[in-house]
Image (cartoon, rainbow, N blue to C red):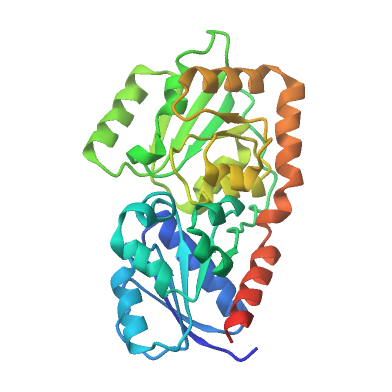
Length: 319
């Protein structure tokens, strides 16, 4: 395969730890490993390249439009990351236009293709974000049953659902919530601080370096992903790689990674059901083992070699 110059466009700024930036950095790493030259930018500035990859249909539309106007014959890949897949492509004219202008579409989990208008499904490819578990023996805390919530706080993530569920647990429960992530609004920060002050089962540690966050996840007994909408959550891929069982809201973005019959789903915003699953995971060894084994069985889907192969196949189609 001939090396290509690739412009990778992401709406997330440098040094951001938000999902779009994490996805961009990860994709660039694999593409460079395949021998390509990759430049990550927030906007396309007209630099010469052989291929553009854009993350987010609506937010990257100005770059997509400019690239297509200046280079009508060059390949353009659009990665649909979350709110664009499950919201914007239905309601936003620019997002819809981005689908038309792209040569290929990338979704981050298998259910994503079904969200696309039928005429675009043939040019869509699934590339699950990979993750390599940290090296080391990360033993769970013995004093508590630690549950990790990992992700920046905004309403679509429903970030306090696990904290609310922990309030419904029996007094004998040893469950403790460790919440990692930046509060993206003053209201979210105030709620996190208030919850920490009034709920002894909840601790918010804020934004910390990713390597440290992953180590906390790896030692946790359980992970909760309570989002109302996800394109293919980084945190879920990380939990799968670390073989940490997840309790997830039953949304397409998580079904596409975990499978339709995964036993750890709860209806979105259903605090009581989540509390019941948390209690069962803590006390029912057979149920916990089933969750653990399921995660281990699907671990190959988030293996780096799998993502590398998918990128190689896709770039090969466009070369």
